[in-house]
Length: 182
Image 1 (cartoon, rainbow, N blue to C red):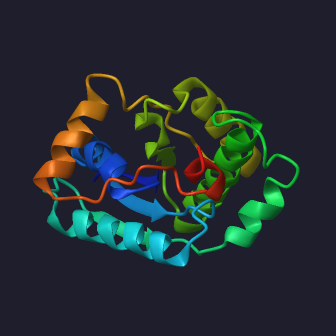
Image 2: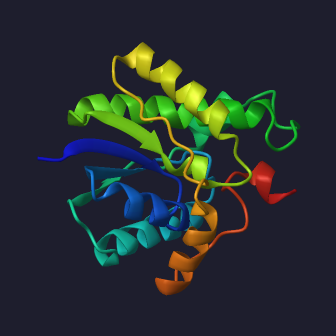
C-alpha cells in the first residue's frame, strides 16, 4: 500500500513532472491552494488545467484533486506593507509560508503521511528556502514534510516537455499582481 502524500500544487506545468516522479511511490492528494492568484478567471483556469492533467497523466498510484479556496484577501492581508518588495524577497517568503502552512493543515486533515510542494520545481524559487519553511510549518502543525528539489535531474526541462505533450497553459507570472507587473 502506497504512502499518502499531499502535494501542494501551484499549477499544472509544475505539477506535471512532480506527479510523474511521485506516483510510483505515493497515493497523491494534489492540493491546489494559491491565494496569491488574485484574479478569479486566472485561478479557475489554472485549477481546471490541473484537473485535466490529473485525469490525463499516467498513474501508478491514484492521484486525487483537492481544491483550496480562492482567497486573495488573505494574501493581500498577509503581505500588507511588503507590496513594493522585489520578486524573491520578503513578500514571496510570506506567500510561501502561507501556502505551505495551509498545506500542512490539509495534510493533517486528510490523514496524509506527509506533504511536499511543486514550488521547488521553478528555477525562480529557492528550494532550500521552501524546504526550510516546509520543515518549520510541519513541526508547528505536527505533520511530516518531504523535502524536495524537483528542478534537479532536468525537472524544469521535463515540465516543459510534459506541458507540450499535454498542451498545458504555461503562465508567465506566479499569479500575484506584484509579479505580473515585473
